Length: 81
Image (tube, rainbow, N blue to C red; front, side, top):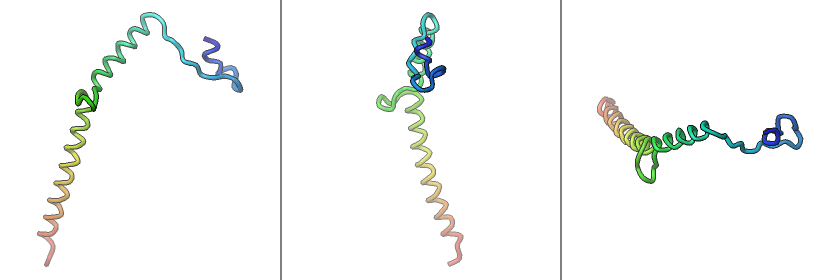
């Protein structure tokens, strides 16, 4: 442990090394990570929250463009000629 955290006590030569979490905590963390990955999903497979977000983002962009077009048309109708 002291070697993995040598940067704390040795500013010049210390480095941060990866730590392994042992025991039940590691299993629990791994399970939580897999659950989060599953919820996030994949853009390539078009599933999960990532795919939902992309779809909503595209819908928002389309709706915004339609709104701007209608707003410009309204301005043209209301402008004195």
